[in-house]
Length: 178
Image 1 (cartoon, rainbow, N blue to C red):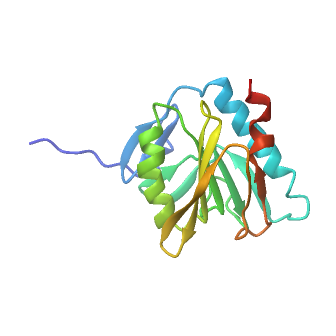
Image 2 (image 1 turned 90 degrees about the vertical axis):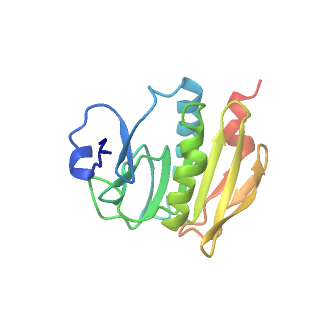
């Protein structure tokens, strides 16, 4: 008889390396992201962070643990969180989560994390495709995500965030265009 192992947050914190935990199943994170992936994440963090001067209870974070429950811990590339009080990890659904897609994580980001973030009521989920210099934005509409569109050179105002964040993808992707 073959038993399927099941892990919890208490196991997760003991592991070496970078992992996520999805419904008790460990998921190894890819090796360090490519420079372009990291550069786009840095550009987006800077762009969002610059809009938070008048919004001191919100912060934009890169690669922080989001502990959903005892058997699911995710590490989004970028999270905009407001009113979070826990120091070690996020406990409340962020207002915006950004995942920058790489070939090795595409299915996890587009399917599994999509479903989890939707169920956890993350208001906005952004999937960024670095090779195409484009993004897909999803907005929670009741219980489901509604695709707001594909963005490459357009701007989008996140109306339902505490701080009224806006992203201008022309500016975010500008330095990566040839």
